[in-house]
Image (cartoon, rainbow, N blue to C red; front, top):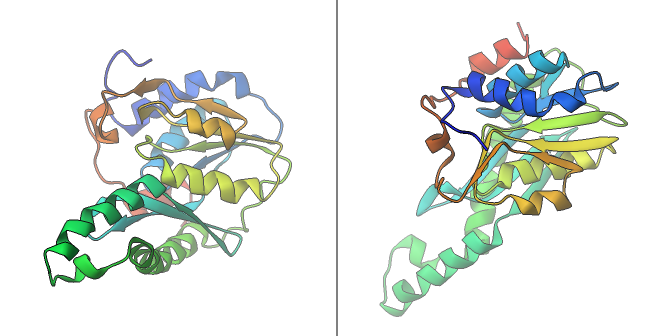
Length: 233
């Protein structure tokens, strides 16, 4: 468990890389960052492990009342979109609409069904997902992880929806070993053991209510920074 907040994503990546040291020298090792914030962390991990770095395009799907809360996520890999839903979030939102409907509220949100809202939000996010994939893969071969040991890195897990989408997408390519890694998680990420062969998260705490609380500096990562880290001209 971390004894202090990480200074920034690079500091978090170095700490995470030390935890992942047993994978140093593994044949075919590949480190994959989840854009945007997971890529700087993954870059620090890849440098320590002397492994190549890549990325998988992912997008959180939020709902109208709380777009920052993940109701699910999308991952784009090899021309296929993988969709995951955060059912507890969708159920809670659906329940919250009942009083509005009973009161005769005429606002658009009051008449939305959670499934319809999710599908509409996911359709919008798909456009950004495809845009990012083209931006991050420009001039590079399609990602193929078949038979390789793959470490999937995010800057932290809140609901874990984007990590879940990425792992499911990557598993379809039949990697030899799939590792889920992040510097911190908000609570116990035990659910990851059903999706990954190994889970490495140094800081797991129910006291964290947002990933940014694990960092002193948690600025937005830009597309330009990601392209630079991936060595895209």
